[in-house]
Image (cartoon, rainbow, N blue to C red; front, side, top):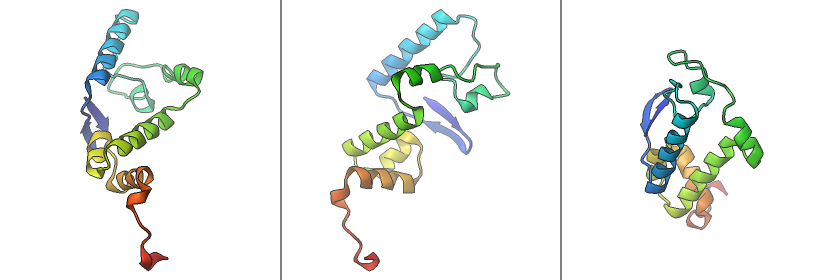
Length: 123
């Protein structure tokens, strides 16, 4: 899946379950809005205001997240932290989530604090 970012496109590699869920979502969306010309998977602040595409509703997913009592940002943070628990590789996190090296290291340190001892020069 390609994610358009301000600094360039980012490729996200999807696991089988995620790909199945996304395929099902796209089918349902096509059934619900067959005439939609929305090329985006989700409506976000960026895609809703994309002048190169059709006008989109700004808060399409907001009611869904509100009903669940979560915020999309928190969901992303939890997903990155969970991945860091499974694979303590900052390069992997950078590739999968399109985050910087500094951010990736923060997640790895949060997930595996026992692997990082205190720096004696900074005590």
